[in-house]
Length: 408
Image (tube, rainbow, N blue to C red):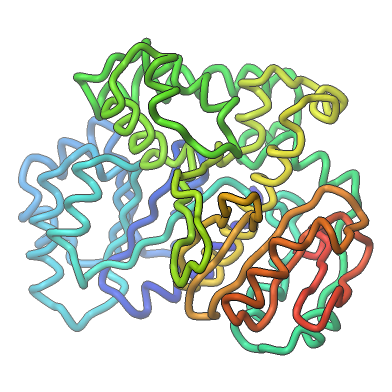
């Protein structure tokens, strides 16, 4: 087993809330994270018929008999669970750390959390392995420092590359799903991805959305590989699939809600220029993207036209996951003007406004950084960050830091 960096966040939330929900894509490690719960925690799996029958027969009675230290896996399979859980929590509202739920996203699950358990539950959005988790090193100090200092020089002085360029490329090509790393076999990885997609579409999505045209949705998933990293035009996609624009909107919501796709909205606050208002997005796991594009080797990837978008998405996803692990509250956007000025990722949260530009190269030039430099000035940011393959962190300007991805 590879230790997950979310464990510390799980126990912090259990100290503060009666219930914690761990949500994420199937096979991203939700069940494995439950193994970190110590005795005498009891674990129930709703995909096991015995456990399902034990709880579904009378959820209220189940929680009276099991008033705490109970973890329920795949909880979205029993919507009746949540009203009973609310009653159980309210019977002893002051006691924290009583229940843990896991689940893949579904409309019923999200509605139950937002309505039945509002104010009683903390949510962890679990992802596949980060780069640091895959190679079993600690998460970077970067995520802590950004929230503690407004001085770029302190961030530069505290960071250093901890992995080599071969490790970065290995992770980039394989992605972060735990099974791919635990088995560490290219043939297995290809077969696993194939079966993963079939199960995701033919079991999970069909079960959650019984009226969905699964053949059209499967074509849509294939199309996402070519749309990853691009600004989205719904009308073009609707014409290509032969469906309506509202249906395409639904498909994107399903893909984002089931943690396959990350939907990124444009940053429009305090805009003094004309902003591109179409959303953007990418497949969250680079290994899944490369499987869909039939990029079987690293050389295939490096020669492919989608290489730049793939690297950019992989780095941004790791940054978002790193802030999630730290427990930071934040939103994410991208920025693009009609004149072509662009910032790949704009984070806004308790640490302020943070623009981030991603480059594959190990050298950056002032011309390539015009967009982020202008954004920092126009929005009065404390600093901006360029993530590249440079060897060591450095100050590009007084308010622009360059950091190697290997330091994140």
